[in-house]
Image (tube, rainbow, N blue to C red; front, side, top):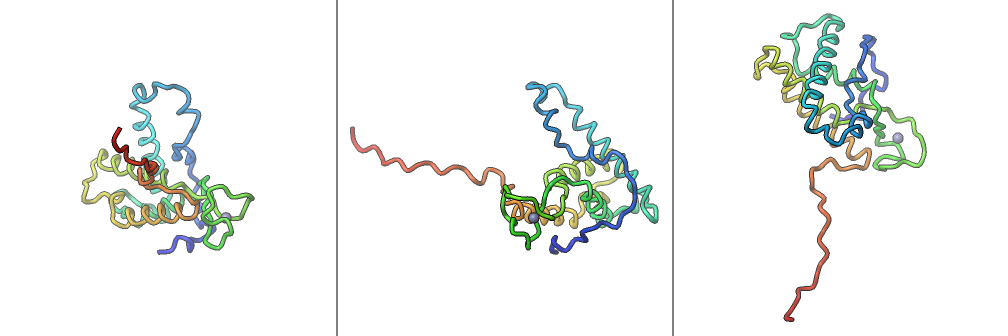
Length: 184
Ligand SMILES: [Zn+2]
């Protein structure tokens, strides 16, 4: 249950190329063109294809090798843990003095992980890709309950650890109390 208890050093030794492509945070791509929202509908499709290839490669390199029909939610979680070693998001342990600080004043030895938002988007793309490749929704390992629970845990922990809120629009600035305009 507790994310702090992950092994610090992943035991995986499977070389996978191009894993950085999984992290869809390239600021230069978003600033290049103001009209990109209307002109690049295929960016998501390209990313989805790359993610799918990476996952299939992961299955082939798995020891013992796995085929897609054998793949369960547990394997998806294994894949996500594997990706953490390529993460770029500092996630403080509960014992770190900077736990909960959005802008820590100094470096610390806490691990870098995949950001929750990246994992969440990745699972969404792989879930769609699985069904596009002939899988049924019932058999979709990316939609497994364990995967949903894991993502929720990651979100909650990273939110606390990094002192940021991932809630959508929960924090609306309070309107200032304006005294009711009586008469006149
Ligand atoms: Zn730390």
